Image (cartoon, rainbow, N blue to C red; front, top):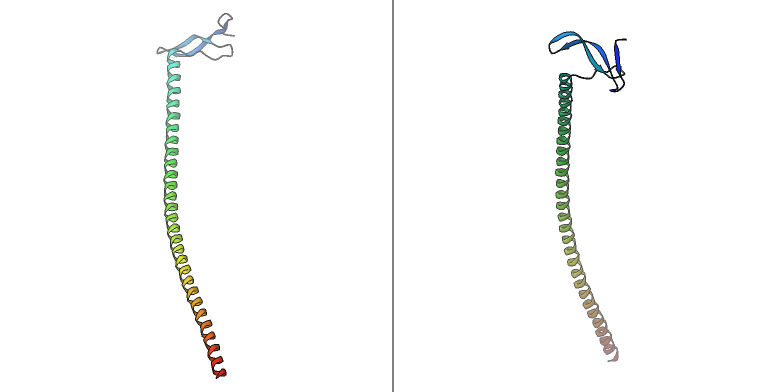
Length: 143
């Protein structure tokens, strides 16, 4: 009731109460077979403007999210750089400690070698003294 179908266009003409061009009355408008009105030029422009506004808001939100992600990545990179610098400093300290330990070990080895030489010399002197004592005892007991 109140519709004239156009099988050729796949649309219907229907009655519509509303305002067009500043005139409020009953108009004939094109509609889809399920009753959706085809938009006027002004309605299409308003819908396009709304779509553009929503797209702009979405783009702004995406840009803000990207900015936040970039700031987070920058913070992570700075933290990683700081951690790398700390690790480098720790590595230098460990290397210095290792060098000091090596130096101490070399000194200890030299000291042990010197002690070993002194012990060997003392042992030689002790054998010489024992031999001299044995020679003197032989001389005393032989005289």
